[in-house]
Each structure stands twice: as structure tokens, then as C-alpha cells.
Image (cartoon, rainbow, N blue to C red; front, side):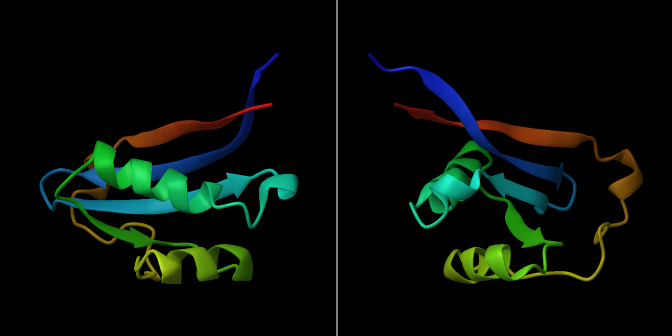
Length: 99
């Protein structure tokens, strides 16, 4: 029998005026690190919002390697565009696995 479990989450903000997205958090249950779920989650995010340029505010070692592999540059500002005050927080939603 397969059950669905939430094993992580990606948090981000988008600005359609600038065609830019900023990833603010990638959280994956430790038992699923190095399984490719982070890559799959960010690939899904890109497919959900085609045409956006992605940046990240994350600087931890665990996410830095993932972002480098996905060619997502880091930014020092959580609000890299002038419309940031209008940008709503959004979530790619939970990362699910069966098992």
C-alpha cells in the first residue's frame, strides 16, 4: 500500500512585472537528502512558472550545492526588484512521496 507523505517544501516569491522569482526556502526531510527530490522540486517550480528568471536568497551549504547544479544564482537582497512590496508570498507546495 502506498501513502502520500509531505517530505519538504519550497517557498518563493514572484514578480510578474520583472519576470523574476526568488526562492526563499527549500526544506527537505533529512532522510530524503541526496535522492534528487530537491532537483525535481525546483524543476517543477520552473515548469509551473515558465519565462521567469530565478534567484535565491539561500546561502547554506546544503542548498548552495543544489542551486549551483540548477544554475540558480544567489542574491544578497530578499527583495531584488522594485515591486517587492507588491509581491505576494507563494509556495510551490509540499513535496510528496509515496511509500
